[in-house]
Image (cartoon, rainbow, N blue to C red; front, side):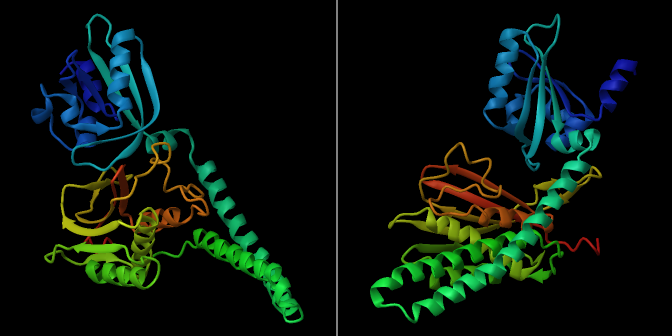
Length: 354
């Protein structure tokens, strides 16, 4: 084996070489692992049969080919046909002397963080969470006094003047509710996991929705009765699915419908820092027929304070994402007008025993 062939094979970054018609000519071992498929299968096949992601990726490839200049897409979500999505920096490099050929380098943001020092930003993030938690606690104390004073004052006011004290009490309670959610982000207590029946969890969430906010919205259940138990914290999972169902219901009109679907698919693996993959074969989908997510927000719905609702706080889905991450599970969203799917993928194994 030549030196260059050896370097190509051992390159720790997924690398592929595609021809002018977008078929795969070469790929290294890291690319096989990233795509979840062997070179024997993919060589000579169209790259887009196996590399999935945002439309920006094929558009960037065409632009690099047309201009004969390298292009870097600094942040894009991409994945293989059976592997979990990852946020990557993608380098598209036209090959000199080989018309139409492009080398694709896929550098996961986890890799970039490991090389260029992600510790400081993470430490800063934890400090910010701690500060937010402390402020939330301190703000609650005077709010309790304000609420009590307004309620006491209302006892001596005529009925026509009660509107203002009622407003003070109502807004104070709303702020306390917001602070309660902020405090939950500072809770780093690990989930109390056990083997649970996911359908029991979903039924609890659906029942709370029906008696709470769902109103006349139809909630349909399409369960796979053969599913094994999942390794999860049942109470936290109820919170996750109640948030997702609530999010779906709030997006719907009078003809709205929410479907809760479960199924088993062993092909999804969550990449781990040690290069292995955690299998997540049990999937729960919350599907609604609402207007869909705005494209500008679709990739940011799990970030704090991002919301499409006029009076929304933007913390519900961020808290869902936090719980899912603590379970080492996966959540994704696909949305178009009339069809939005939030999918949660869970493990059926107890990692502490495996």
